[in-house]
Image (cartoon, rainbow, N blue to C red; front, side, top):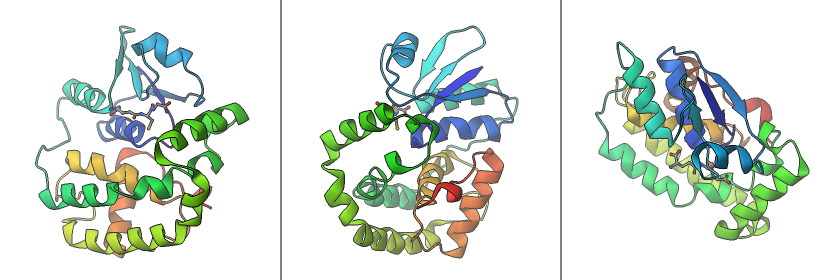
Length: 215
Ligand SMILES: N[C@@H](CCC(=O)N[C@@H](CS)C(=O)NCC(=O)O)C(=O)O
């Protein structure tokens, strides 16, 4: 199987996680962000992640990919138990976190942004819906303050250092990509239980954190 991803993309991280958690081998490659042809050919739209299965059929949508990989496993890893408090927390953080993270992405040394045209493509597309990156970058300190506060609220929601609800669930799949992308931001203050969960989910899934690329 082959998985096409962008390294910055939270949905792609969800898909990458399940291969590690289920110990299912997969080849993965990072497409340039302005490569429209490859995804269009595979699934008829410009969206990653995309899984090309062993029979050469292609599948989009991170949750469909996760469910497919789980269906191949003799012992699926993910409980469907979900936490209302975590869902609310993710909704709250979702109201502003892209304002912090999106402007950071194209200035980070990700494979998908290794050409100027790929970086420009991303910046133009994202600014068209989120607004100019300039003012958002200027608001970085206040956005960091907000997420640092919200990370302290997350502590009470975490049940175990190895899984947000105590046993691995779809909630871990929803939470980890955000924690991973926050490792790009040097000024984040990590409460110990949040850092422990972040590190454990990285180890369990085999998806590395991004501290080396932080700025
Ligand atoms: N519902 C999709 C969403 C995937 C998605 O939004 N992917 C983004 C990257 S984070 C994408 O490919 N957007 C098109 C683009 O970047 O041009 C899923 O869960 O897989």
